[in-house]
Figure 1 (cartoon, one colour):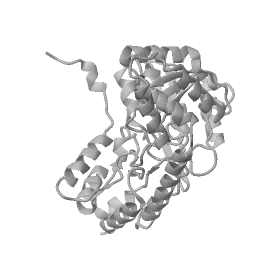
Figure 2 (cartoon, one colour):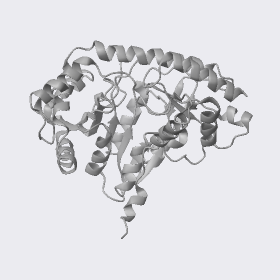
Figure 3 (cartoon, one colour):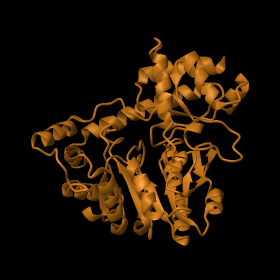
Length: 397
């Protein structure tokens, strides 16, 4: 018996393969410096854990509404709305088993087979995977490297829009490169969406991982709230990556569809965990504040370590927990042509594990520079310093 041909279009999150390779190397007796996965090795704040335990004790272990429990939908509407200067109600919120399911359900709701969706590349690989798996055409747009980070390639965005384009995926505070739009850049994205009548998925997974200033939302720009779905996750802000809880926030008509898709796929999101997130969103905030301060200390250590390496120069990003250095000159010096080979040799010779640009979408035509990605969310400051020193020795050898 054969499986569906459509499966050939289904991608995956290949960073997990890098994680497995690092684990295999560790099992051979090596100490690993794990920069490969955007996981967080910090405990979920105690008040959230206790709220989950209480919910279990109170019997919230059965089914609940597919759209989510009313208390949590209302709490997220207040939280997301107040932090963006917008007015949302519970009917604008669909609770999901993580942020990732929002991507596929959004695409299902707005795209027909054969239609096109613009997505950032390099970017979260599930964008590309879900567009193509559902029979659409994934149209990539990239970034330009600048001295202070990365900016959107608007020529690619404008060139990519056609009569078949239905939506644009926009990941401000970006994985993997940490790109952060200026208000002017965000307004230009909004202008293109409005001009071409596009839906926008605003992936706000890192919206609240901000080390300086306040974040901006494209939904806040006039005319955009009515066409924007916000992807919300509790994974980063509350160190809850394995709890699998998130939400879609947007216009009622598309939220109703996303909730219906949730009922079809999962019945509902885990009941007692939803009660825990009510506490996370509306309860005591010292835990998330400590998480953010710890991540900032790790960022500073990682930026310092990378900039000590001959051939690397990166700016200090003010959001996310990723660094995306250009390693083209290092590869030339070491006479390595394949960035994945650089990754493999770095693991063997320095015990440092990281991802490459190739884990974040198919390389674009005309790309000549090479990049690697470091996630500093799952490694302590002392080990960041130690790992970077070992990487420096390997890169400069």
